[in-house]
Length: 215
Image (cartoon, rainbow, N blue to C red; front, side, top):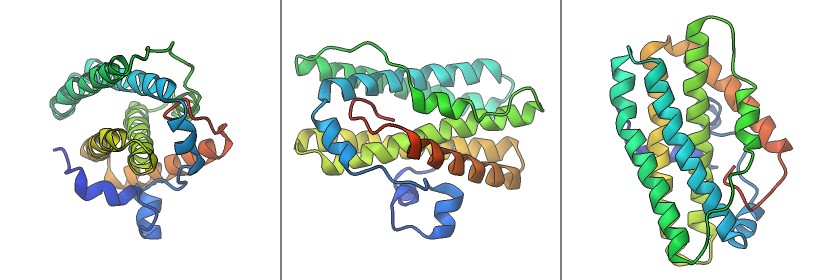
């Protein structure tokens, strides 16, 4: 079941409890300077956003294909594929409306660093869990970044544009957490999610601050 997005936005705010931060929330907020850099690189940030939505859709398709026997996962992710592809088209339309062009896809160092943390070659359940938690983490960081844009950009239209995306991404990342708990022992999910949060914080600390990318 898709958990309501608005009620879970608190999980990415800075003033949440320490316990909640460690279990379900990102540990490291985005550097406030990132929004200013992104505002100066609108063509680049919109292009990168478009590719993020495209990859989210194809990743969900891959999960459906690989785990087609898991009916609840298939039923939950099928509409997400449609939604993410719709987001891709919305961002593409925004580029075109502004007379901007879709830039070439770049190497996503953030996602690549997350993929290196996935357990491979072990028990299939561990692989499955890490795939879901990787998706949850990418959606959570995207949500946090969209929140920053919705609050920090000078363009009021773009603030509202990104607030809509923020609300959607909040629902997505909680969905992946919920799906993990459906198929894997919840205590295992909780423990591994904490490990993922620690790793993601380390990744964020070591990434170059750039305004031409969502992550």
